[in-house]
Length: 320
Length: 272
Image (cartoon, rainbow over the protein chains, first blue to last red):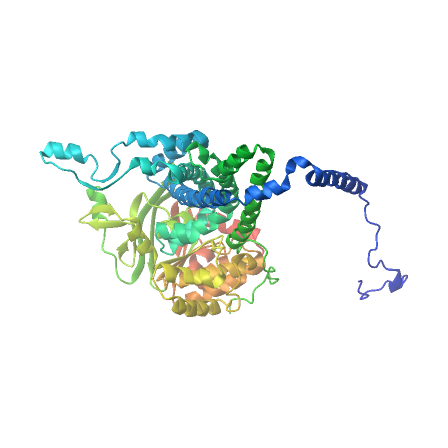
């Protein structure tokens, strides 16, 4: 509304332009789009409801089988969670190594990333399942090269704390988690590195000037801010990992969602409903993950977003 | 270290808080500091003036070792910064020891550098808790007191992005004071501020000076230098051109370079 603090002699207040009541721009294209999409949606719905090939009853029955559910919980969910824990913590560690002043650490991180990014996951998982052949006497923990040292010194026996059976490590879900986790760490390393580099250098300087050691600077100041950049692509990676658990069959792991569904499908000669069942499972979990990502992003975006209204006080009260 | 360099390591005197001798620093063969000497007594306010690129910010950053120096020595409160002097042989300090030396030196940056993911009061509490191991409760009480002192007692829960530049810089001053420093370094603290916000930050700094804080201030605010500084140091091209009482250096500069700088500054700003 206008204020009539100043009225020109020739025009009354009523003649001055008031509130705008204009005709909005029309969007005929939108109506056309709505019509087209409505028709397509109706066709899709019709297809889903009437096409016999879906065999919805079979789909839901298959989804409800105990071996499918257990494959979903252990092979899909658990492996996703464990692999992402390995991947994220390994990735952050690799990123910090890569950005450190120590050329050895930086080099090791680079080689790791190079190696694990180069190998397709399916082949990596297949290899993981066969690694036991390298360690036929088991994987021992103790003094490195102990047998050589003992031989030089003329002693006998061994200097080993404990020995694990390699064929137990490099099999099943453990091999799967190691393979997927290491591969993920290589990708996460690049994501975390980008996140760390996105934080203004002045932040680390301010923290250093306060007397914080490099570890504290990283943990308290740099990483929390880097998370804002790291979380969205990590959500992507988690969703990708969820789906890559279907590659576990290469290890081979059979306690996994898609393998179990497939075996039901081949028993009953019903391939298509099985694909639908698998898609429904993955759709459901991905939706849940996306909700989780929303909350994570909100948490790490604090202080950056416009959650709270901006203070409308450009000039402060002066230095008291 | 050569014997000559070792001989230079004179014993610092106790009323002096900062004692810098022949400080040199190069970035990629570009010598930005060409032998700076500076003494700051306890409770003194020293303003570093000079055209941009004269090395004043670099020198300030050398004092708390955000930059390492190539030559010369800097002592703060009798402690040689960055090195351990064992019979004339210098040993580089570990990062942990350097961090410990920095604890007693507060720094305020041109771009504030508040931690954006923490509220104002969390910014002030962070270093006492993380570095000094102070309790959360105690630290909160002290932080609130410091925010009150800079006139922002009611803005503790705001994130930096919700504060004006002047308010952010005052929080940054409170954050530095929370470590109870014996020396405060200000790197162009008002240069990134809108003109109408400069005053509130300078007011806090004046008050700090009145309370006896030892301060080294890189600034272009001539009125602040004239009114508050005990000593004004004019730098140009990596050397100290002249230094002295503000009235002498600013009112009656002896060197042509100082004169040129001051005239240019006066013609740029309406206020002298």
